[in-house]
Image 1 (tube, rainbow, N blue to C red):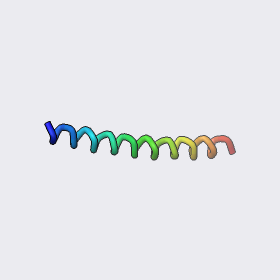
Image 2: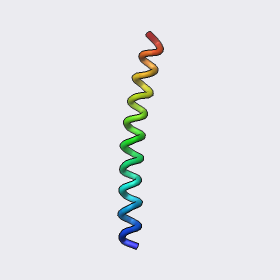
Image 3: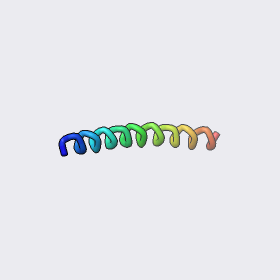
Image 4: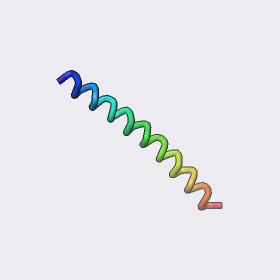
Length: 35
């Protein structure tokens, strides 16, 4: 059970990091398209 929880937390962290990165990339692409 403890192992499962750890796995969940890790995946959540990775997903959050990916969300931040993709969001930043999206904003950058938006600015690039606007120019």
